[in-house]
Image 1 (tube, rainbow, N blue to C red):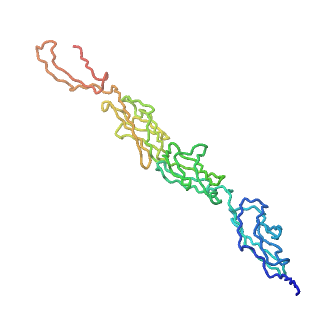
Image 2 (cartoon, rainbow, N blue to C red):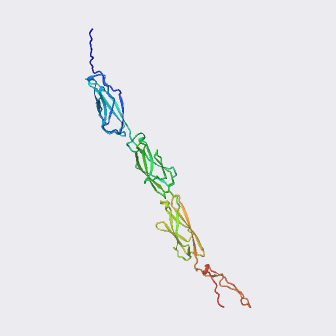
Length: 382
């Protein structure tokens, strides 16, 4: 018997093979340049020169290939980061790793590598407008919609969820007249507005994400309040002569008055008037903010000793509002009337033999004037 040893020589009849055709690698987008990420290496059933000789990575901007020797495992491939990552710009990277043996001809195998970038809160919310504007009438009911603030965050998950909060322009509490939905960004009216108190509100809206270290941004909101005709004109008597002589010349000033209306525009423009049947007139000032009450004719106490003058102030609003002011003027008497006898001449008969001192006749005279200006009798001497 003879012992024979047979040595089987290897030929390159096997290609390198990776454990998986597709490999997924998760990397934080905050990874620093130079970071190394080990990936699964390939295996080749052949030995010697026919086993794995080298690895090659497809050309890309973000990763390069490095290999380290690990005993029986041979070369182990590593991906080395050579450029900063940005998930918001490129959330995934697709690489192709090729393992090649040393046979002639050489054989190779490939593995697809998908690099998924994990998000970090590195982006603040961005408002679609830096300045929002809206106009609302002062009588708008509670709940009236004004506008919607919209902000986006390119991060994902809670890092990209945006909440809204209202701030005043200056540091302090937000105005009570408005309400902002923290989730939708809808701004509505919450309280009563008053143009006469405030015509414009300047607000700030803070858009914040829900990241563990929250990032935020601000945008400006301008709310302009429009006037409605909700205020009556007011008449203020600044000077009054309530007793006017009946012989006062036409144009005599009886009263001076200011007219005001808190509304704006035509709603605040006021016109004053009085009855045409009165012997008085209103003379406006050039700016229309004041009026003079004057006589437009001579007065006659004997016709009317007193006048109740109603002055009406009316604004020019589409639903006009008005108010009135009552002025009482007394007419002072002047001696402009002569006494008048009831008959002229008088004819009467005197009986003869009448006794001395007996009344034989009476005369009557009237005077339209009053007081000391009224008539008195003067008798001739006998």
